[in-house]
Length: 478
Image (cartoon, rainbow, N blue to C red; front, side, top):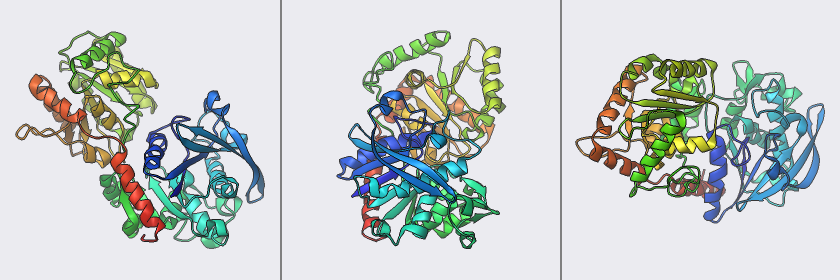
């Protein structure tokens, strides 16, 4: 089949979160199954120059947004066997950053319209459009409303993947006519959301099939607590909703070959992992001790990631024999908190506020425990990467964390991490204490580490599920 991924970000070109990792890795796996998978995305100013220099312009058209006639260039690049198309418009995309601008409604209305309008100009005729998150949410809706009468679009099928329901693309009602070329008759239960237009809702209503990035998250978003006011709509569409767990790129995240870490290792050479721990301690100016457990957080510093729980019990945590390393950026309250904790606990805490890909790999390899107590987590990649490196996760049982981390059971010897259910700081603290108690039992700890490292975190199984879904969709079974 011919599948066109339409995304707002993609590794290796530009990234703000897990969506980019999925868009970078999943097409490669789907191609191995015999599909022609290509990716369409904006040409951001932040894309590295060496990629831009390799892009070939294949079309120039005009995209109409109501009274606006906007330039649209289409550029093409082949990278690691996958063909990428880039929508070029410097007014909308040549900026410092990808999201969070006053005119995001206009920018991504343009992107949705452009994605549909450029299809006749591509050297590729897709069978399926696979759209991701709210930035592409109007594509299935506009396809049904305005394009189906044209032969190229008549039989196109659409899939929409929800990576994070919290971000929905909600804009004033006025954008219907002013940006989307839709009259007020469309402002009904298909688009209306508390007096506004909701891109995410448009996609849920109009896509042929909907996926989420883990089975547990699929169940959660159909409940009010996690449903972000769309739970009723999602329940009504449950017949075309499926949760497929994300994987990670096991070639990039492989401790046996990772060029960023000090000593390569696998589950049969764990003594080499200790060298990474010593290097990490040395790098951050912490006491170099094999016996002192290192707990790490690599995360966006936001409420979603459960950092309120960490704040609540951090002083109690500091009474234990451990070291704590944080890498990330986000809300100022959390950045300031971790900076202050480093100042108050100079012998135990280090906070790197920012992001550094090489250092992230070194932390995954050098830490003993990985803390991820998320309030909600559609899938989560951090826990998968940590386990790949033999760094044991401590997670809350939500979303993909619940699907991938099995809490260690000392009676059966089963488990690849530690988990707690309630969003409660002292439940988290108890679980950390429990993990630390097993860390001191070296034989038990090595068993947990080997269990974590031996599991399959690749995209292979998930790609098989997507492939089956595409085929059924193409045959009209959905």
